[in-house]
Length: 293
Length: 322
Image (cartoon, rainbow over all chains, first blue to last red; front, side):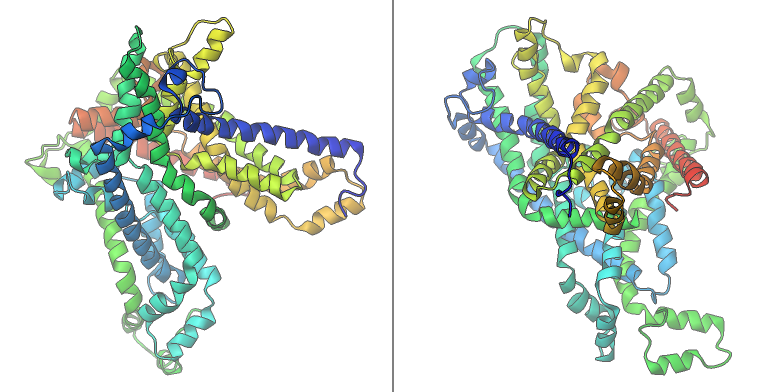
């Protein structure tokens, strides 16, 4: 029914909106395109700003140097391990905490809910948490990256809301009549029916681990355990301080700029590849959160 | 639903006259025993990693000494709080924290709302979906890479921004080494990264508006503009208020990771906030009690502002978080 009686003004209104959104879209995409193009371009063209949109004199030189860097490879492996292990712990604990809270017949539900939610509004702070990890003997251990943030209360609430609204109570009751206990229902009925929310959790927690650098800076001292983001910080940000001093550009620095762009691409590519497939899931996840919020 | 999972036999037992209250509780706990198996590990996690640090925060009132431990160190009262309030950094940290947050709310809060409203007006599904895919994407890029991009693009010698300035006849600007630029770079790069992601929640609210409202308006001859002003925006107001309470409640709270990556001693004047100062004094300087006191002060004012804004909102608009 819309569109039939549209006046010229209404059509113009939509045309203006489409034009603005197209510009917004270009602004959002341009920096990413520029990084990708620069990483494939001739170092000389990058440093003299010849690269504006597409690669100039395409070359893989920067990638050869990035892939030839043993430390980047090792950190990449570390990050993959931390992400897989950490996400598995996160998702399991979040589901295990969320399921009892989704059951209205669970004795103690309000008590546990209050204990968990209070931490969203108040925390002990950075230093007491650091001292705790230190006292537990977890300094310079990979567990310091995985355990202290094992459950996010926000995600736990999203998952609880999903269990409450999506898993039919009749199905669970039928399983109890058939002699299942709560654990059986959780593992055999609830979890298999929850793949959409598990996908969302894997994405949220997984991206968090992949991109995390601060806990590694805080807790790890052994370079061989460093995750990728710490090395990225050294390459992308800390090395640039000499850039401010001015002076002539050496060959080393010239290649350095393209290497920076290549490392950005290499570090972000896994997420960018997974992202389109998970888009419909994470939109759903944010919406479930919004119902509660 | 309260006893939805009880078997008929248990129901009968529970309705028997005069069951002692304690037995009743024990019985329902026993009935939930497998649920306890699931939740106890999570509960232990919360106690150790959330509540033990709250207990540890008492070193803010003590002269903490690692050999005497948290409990054994001597009390000093508000000594460290006073030291912080009287220090030259106190006002600078409060000013910077508030300035960055207010700037961020003024610019960053309306951006996702406008984006969602515009996307909502687009009828072409393919175009809408393409725009959404592109604008959500920066949210997933790591802070380290974002700041790395800023460093490269804003570089005075090889950055594209300074190339544009130079080609327009201007002098190159050392953006990241000038206190005057820090907050703008921080806030606008944040808008670039988060505006798209932030719009999802508003799009969800817009999708929930009853279509019959629009149909009735069309019958009454309301134009698209009138429908936007009289239906869409009023329906979005509760969501906007909730999001605004959350933002205002966190006005003393700045994500320090991006600031730590972006700032340097030259820009501390405008960039240093409470949390980055806690990191430098506490972790780098090992002044545990002093920095815990600052962190605790920050936690308490965060808590108080959130409750204050929630109360104001409940009185004024009848919308609140709880």
